[in-house]
Image 1 (cartoon, helix red, strand yellow):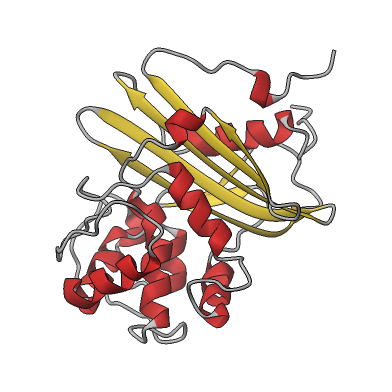
Image 2 (cartoon, helix red, strand yellow):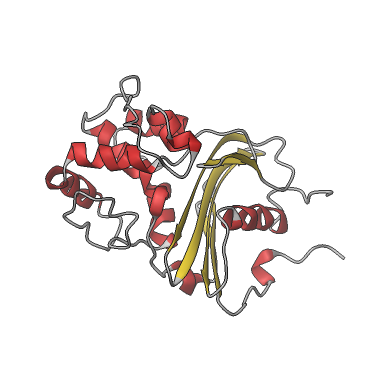
Length: 262
């Protein structure tokens, strides 16, 4: 018997809330899994780093080859954060202190204007020098974030195409992998034949819930795909890679990737 498509599975479990959005960018078709959950807003955490990078490059606060920030010797929970960083390493390892400094350099006066001009997220951007994307004062839905990623590929995107190309290049990864603060991780499935692969992820938690985010875009068999997933857990532990593993399973269940033999 062939495996059941993910869209026909029930993932209802007490305290576990799943959203996934699968987009065929070639045909411009979109499939939601648990659409109501995909409209629920939570902090984007480090997923927002790519947006901060876009506005910084677009408005001249950084250049790709002039983006070095020096580590101030503050101790951090991840060893990869305890060194000087540039845009490439900061995006690859979700270096919170780098983007907090970048936001302070831009300043909330200008930064708030830049972000609200995008008009992609319905929550107002706080007037704050702190990391609002991490502290719970700013929230986005998976649906909004997926639409933003799709818009970057429109004929008339919200940034110059050169800016988008730079950030896309910085998010390029080996097919079937993701990078976060703890390093590079392989995802389940057979990713051979995938091209132009990018991915990003985020993890947020407070005393009430934990959220794991993941998105990837890639081309396979001349079809371009975008997948975004988020798992919210209440009353249960969650792990940073949960959403990424779910995403890999969806791509296999929906026959975008062949099922792994292991």
